Amino acid sequence: MTTLLEAADRLYGLALPEFTPARDAMVKALRKEDRELSDQVKALKKPSTAAWVVNLLVRRDPEQVDQVLAVGEALREAQASLDGDELRALTRQRRQLTSAITQQARALALEHGQKVTGAVSDQVEATLTAAMVDANAGAAVRTGLLVSTLAATGVEAVDASTFVAVPDAADFAPSPIEAPASRPPELHVVPDPDEAEKKLAAAREELEDAERVAEEANHSLTAANDDVAGLEARSLQVQAEIDELRRRLSEHEEEQDEIDDQLSDARQVVESARDDVRAADAERQRLAARVARLTR
Figure 1 (cartoon, rainbow, N blue to C red):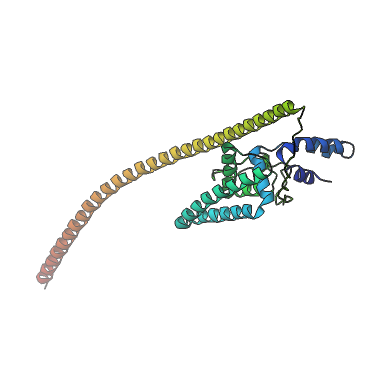
Figure 2 (cartoon, rainbow, N blue to C red):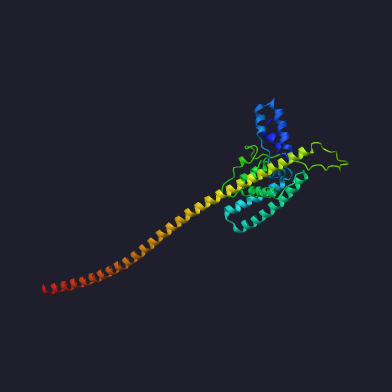
């Protein structure tokens, strides 16, 4: 192991309860050899349960994740080209796909001894949806190094570096994970003297995961509220601009009516002036002829 990315790849591929002990052991082993790398490994955050499930899916079934990202790319292209029929079809496909793959991810997690609650399942599906909506989110998911779940509105690009253990892990392909071997049936159960302590540790870990899920949900809510506030402000600005344009259009229409009336009057004056010119010209010709007769 020579790089932080290699260390992270190994740690984020472990079962969730193994992460912290393995990280601490790795930090201790690296302390004498590479103090800087040891400090970097120590700073790696334990993934939330939902992030761990997504990482597991990426490592166990990368083809499914590639399908998610492919549909997401097609969806963004349809949005860019404003192809309504294709957009609606892809949106339905997106919902069906994220729901189906989320269920598969739950099953994979159970194979590895990790139960997934409904709340965690929602976070997994939201992350898969974000990977479809936003290209940066998709790249973050593909690394298999998520520390927290993702949410994307499609309005602003996701800063994937804040959700990945190693920010510069773009285009990183994580190591695959094999399905766990089935365990033989136990013949007898040996009482564990540390059972109470282990239960307490497990309960604390579940509480930590629940607090992290709540924090991520609050973060997503804050981001969504910010987007709504920004769009509402922009809507008010655009409406004000529309009102101003309508006011100016009304003024121009009134001015056009006045100009039309003035133009009609001016045309009548021109026509009257032409009649006067024709009459004066006829009188001039008559008098000229009279003068000509008198001078003969």
